Length: 265
Image (tube, helix red, strand yellow):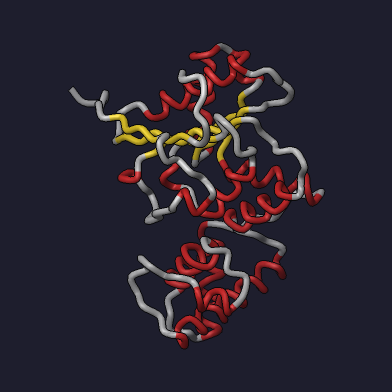
């Protein structure tokens, strides 16, 4: 309930320390301070649809049904999908899960790179998409720190050939991955003169990809109380270690850690 954070704020803590509860109370506070209540000026986003439904239910109990008049609760993929649909005038085709894995397997087999489909998919997500590599030269220059498997120039050339083949297939099938959708949504928002939200609250922040962080940063102007972020790096589903500062999110001096676990006796 602090009146104002001068910029993005982050709350971390282990399981059961109440991070999501803190985020919901922050949403309630921000909602009570709104001057312009047009549309839904507060976005409360989390990683999955199921979590979003649970948070929406709890927010209604905390702040009454009227709080949902100004707070939109949804997962980040749905935000990206809506922005792209509105900007392009049609529902974007999305590929994920086993269909995406099968397509990578096809590309890997056809090119005979000697690299597994899993490695190629991870390299694409964690290096190419994470660092916005748009060309072979950009990929050759980018750091691969933390990937575990070293690649020389020949290895990177094989990866880039697979990435290009994958992109051609996706264009042919008129499909995008969720991360590509987030990337495209960021581009569409950047061309707007007015940002979609006044405040954005991010739950389960540890599982977001760089492309999703770039979208989140684009959704709200840099201003007091713009972003409120909660998460726990030790609860990652995926092996991602995103630097918020590289995403244009500076939390220096506005970070707190919760230490009491309320789930255990």
